[in-house]
Image (cartoon, rainbow, N blue to C red; front, top):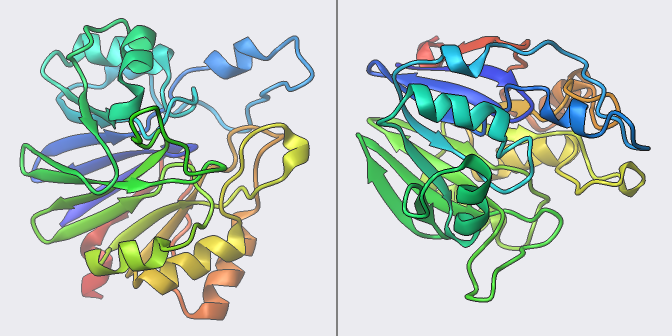
Length: 260
């Protein structure tokens, strides 16, 4: 069995065979502090789950792209300090930006591009493009926004990062036979002044179309200006016959549910 805990926004802790993987953690108040005196205040809706300096024995950490709620110095610097052996998965296109932000040598991260894979400590990471709001690439054609298919033992998780639905997405993901899809539901509202994501309807339908056994929504209930109602997501998932679970902040999911 594997276990997941939702850390808020798009952050998750994955536990399998005693090994811990942190996926896109945002565990500080850096955005609230940064935008406090602006016309786009990031007012928190939920408390921080845990101080990142208390997290130990983290084998792998990921960042799907360079936005602070997915690449947070306030989370990653203390986390890396307390987990000196951890490996850090990033889009290769973002290497220089990432290492500058987290104050690490340029060769520290493990870089991936879309449709590439890397195996680390019994986990295999496959790079998947993400459209936030476009399939943006660097000068070498490498994707700046990504998701990851994570395989380990008999388990497969798809964490989309921040993305809209793009052409070929379903065909790309369906062969992976995803057990749990972790998908944003906050939608794409240009009036918010930030890049958008899947909405409730799209996230439910995408999970169904790729054949995910379960979908867990995320990217809501962090900031008041950029959220969604997960109850509406449940309605949409039920409409298309997609199995789903909504986790509370710090809530736990176990793959044991698949045996029931």
